[in-house]
Amino acid sequence: MNRIDRLTAILIQLQTKRIVKAEEIAHRFEISLRTVYRDIKALMEAGVPIGSEAGTGYFIVDGFHLPPVMFTQDEASSMMMAGKLVERMTDQSVRTAFENALMKVKAVLNEAQKDHLESLQAHIEVLKPHMQLPAQAGNHLSELQKAIADRRVVEFQYINNQSEHTLREVEPIGLFYYSAAWHLIAWCRLRNGFRDFRSDRIANLKTTNTIFSPRSISTLQEYLNSLQQSNIEMKSATLNFNLEAAKYVHNSRHYFGFVSEEKNDGRVRMKFLTVDLEIMARWLLSYGKDVEIESPIELVEIVTELIAELHTHYNVSV
Image 1 (tube, rainbow, N blue to C red):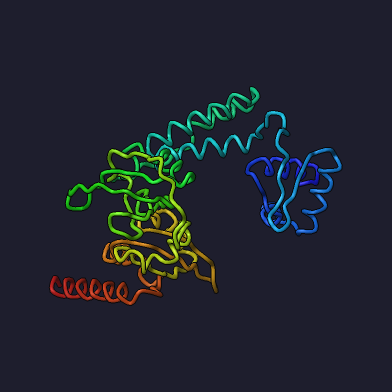
Image 2 (cartoon, rainbow, N blue to C red; image 1 turned 45 degrees about the vertical axis):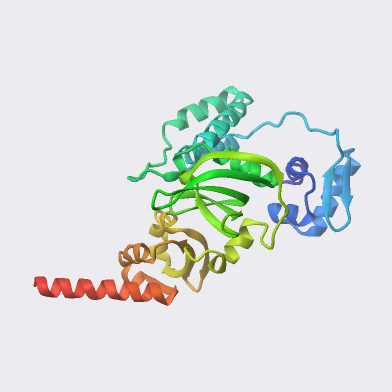
């Protein structure tokens, strides 16, 4: 990216939030902080009213706006592809909002770009899994996003595994997608602790006017870091796949609570959060010696037991 394009992109980034840190700009464009400072100075010399807060970041002075942003063909194509994922992995509230946003994107495209998207539309698809995604039920995700951002208490009926209904009043801190479902992470005032609520089991959701203050855990990442202590139903697992097997794992790992990955010494180290280690163990059997279980030991024991059962079964069969 040449400097002119980067300056324009930085200006757009500054308008995406109230304050943007210099580190964020440097990370996005893979440039040094010194280069960020020079670029900001260049924008100011060009007449862009940029303010700064020491130790915080930069901001655009109120009242300044860019002309309507035009999208490149690649940017428009990526939005269309994202729409395919939204259609399969979210509920109706998010799908409707995204469809409206995509319509606005298409409205500012030129004729060639519109023709490009039209021809591409029928050639990209996200395969619908054999099981129904729980997150496709309900109509709560958009309202939950607002409640999280505004730090408002929400009330709802929650249906557990035994089909029991309980009235919950919670302080939402984040939405987490794993095991083919969206989950609301929140402080439950009924149970007096952080809890994990599957979105498709939420009914009669209502956002109250009550504003809550952050607790010891105020972000989703903090919750995930302390999940083992906060919620005994969830169990973490760390697996090491060889590079060849990792290519195939990408197609199925999200059904088993995939969280993150990192490459290390020719292997891919993946972290998972799951509610059922046995289901994960049966999945891992298909990868044989191409996967090594780093933790927990309980998962190793389950896999060992399954292998012993198979060995006995086929010895008897012979």
